[in-house]
Structure formats: C-alpha cells, structure tokens
Amino acid sequence: MSTADLMAAPLGQPDISQPYVLAWYGCDLRTGYIIEDLRSLSPAGPLSRRLGTATTLSATLGLAGAPADWEAATDQGRSMLVAVDTATDTPLWAGIVLARTGGSAQTVDLQLATPECYLDRRYTGTITLLQQDQAVVCAAVLGPAMTDGPPFQMDAPATGKLLDYSVTDGDDRTALSALQELMGADGGPEWTVDVAWNSSHDGFVLPIRIRPAVGSQSGTPEGVFDFPGSVASYTLAESYEAGRGATIVQARGEGEGDGRLSSNAYTADALISGGWPRWVYRFTPSAGQSDPVQLNAHAAKALTLMQTGARVWSVEATASRSPRVGRDWNLGDTVRISISSSPRHRSGADTVARAWAWELDPGADTVRPILVEED
Image 1: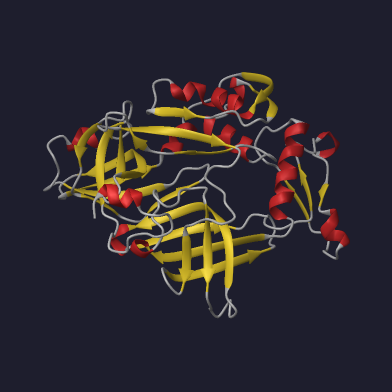
Image 2 (image 1 turned 90 degrees about the horizontal axis):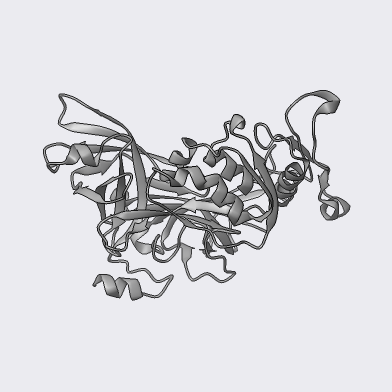
C-alpha cells in the first residue's frame, strides 16, 4: 500500500498490516534543516507527548553505523532529533538534544526533551496588556522565544476571549510557566508544540498551536479503541483524592495571614443540594500570583474539573491495529472507547474522552493514550 493510499484511508479504520517504522533525522536546532539520517539511533523507551508540557526520552546512537556528520546532528544545545512515521511520512515527535555522553564504547547516549523545554529557558520580560485576546497575550509571552531560537511558527488565531495580563522582568517568569498559568485559568487557552515538515521537505518547523481547546472534539469521533480488539488492556482510574475532587474551591495568593489574597469560594451548589458532601480544596496556582481576577479564574476552572472527580482511562493497545496517531487522531482530539465486556464493565461501556497524552513504542507495537473524560 502506498503512502497516498494510507493518507486516504478512512479515519478510524487503520491498515492492520502497517506497524510503525520510524525514520530518525538529526537537525539543526535553529533552522530545522536535516543534517543527517540517523539510522543507527535506538530510543531507550517510548515516545511521549503531553498537552502544555515537555516530555523526555533517552536514546542510543550506534557509532559503527553512524553517518559522517553524526556529531553535528546530535550536538547538545544545537540539534534536535525528529521521528517520522515512514508509512504516512508524518513527523510524530521532536526532541532537543540536551546531553550527550560517550567514550570508549561503541555507542553514544543522548538525553532529549520535546521543544516545550526550550520555553523554560526563555523569559517573558515585562508585559502589560489590557483586554487583549488570549492569543495576543500568548504571542506576547512567547515573543522573546521567537528570536534566535528553534524554528517555531506561531499558530494562534483569535480565541474571542479577552483578558488582562501583566508580568515584570523582575518576576523571572519563563515563557513555559506563563503559558501554563494561562492554561490553568477558567476558560484559558490550551497549547502544544507540534512538529511538521517545512515547505521544501528538507527540514522541520515547530508550530506552536494555541486554541480554546487543542485538537478536534467530537461527540462521535471515528477513531475507536475497542476491547476486545485493538486494546490489550485498560484501566479506568476514578478519584476524589485531594487535588482531584472538590465541591468548594478557593485559589490563594502567596503570603500569610489577613493580607493574603484569595479568590472567591467557588461552590458546586447543584451537587451539594443533590446530596454531595462539602469537599474543600485550597491551592496556590503559581508563584507570585497576586491578581484577584486571575485567582478567581483558576478557582473556577479547578471546580469545573474537580466537582465530580477525575475519570482517566489508561489504554494499552496494539499500535498497528489501532487508530494511527498523527493520521487518525492527535494530541487533544477526542477518541471513542468501546468495551464489549470486561471484569470492570461486565455490561460493556462506550464513552468519548480526550487524548491529553500518548506514548508510542514502535518496537513493542504498542500505543498508550491517556484519555480524560470531560463534562
């Protein structure tokens, strides 16, 4: 089957004859251009991605099969490695080389982190914005990182939601922490850093995708993980532990005593009236937070997420028999979980949940999405 045939295959109906085979490219971190094809590279674990944060990977490069310019292609702080699904020609994962260790052995060990890690090494500077669209605020936060950095491309259409935002250079706020703070507020934007081919197909770009909700959310997604079927095993974790469930939430600023800033108390009145106990949760959303409006926004979002507790599906599936990541579903998309019968769900279960994270282990032909049910 050709790449064109694969790309045209209907969503939710992957070709079971196509296991994941990855091509690894060593690229210049500033430009994204390919330096070498690293055919002797072996990841030491699964590839993974999560919304709004970095993930890491260890890898080993066999020197006997390494290309001539392998050192430039794996130079710490100056290179990134990109994994491409050869069946669909889709870049799936990018990692910046942060450490390289080698000597008398026939291999070199590499420590990688996804491009979000770079945003924790660039600072916002001083920003004061009043009643600006969330996308404008995010672009301002990311402004310094767009200069003399990786090949980021801003993908941030207007969200239609306005906010006030201020930070000073003296706060030492990194772009990563600022974006995570914005994402943690009620109605805050979601974000992730993708990887894609450049226009000339000789390197890669890193779109920074900012949306009210990243991905495609559908009540009837075509991508289906079924048990029995593509799913080898699954667990449904339901929790009302501290930090995971609450019917009353307050966000607190830093400090002590009467002078400490606090949000309003956000209460799940309908649940309490319906018989739920009062479970109280207080938290400090981020260091240096002193804006009452932002504290209210964080508390409101926390209550929305926590009032009925967390329901998280951890799925382990055969990758070649499952909807294909990068083609049939992506980070932030909704997928369907269909359980015919299991000890936990004897009468079966059928639900839709969002992919907040995934792991892919091509060598084991295994994909592990982390799927969160959202009200």
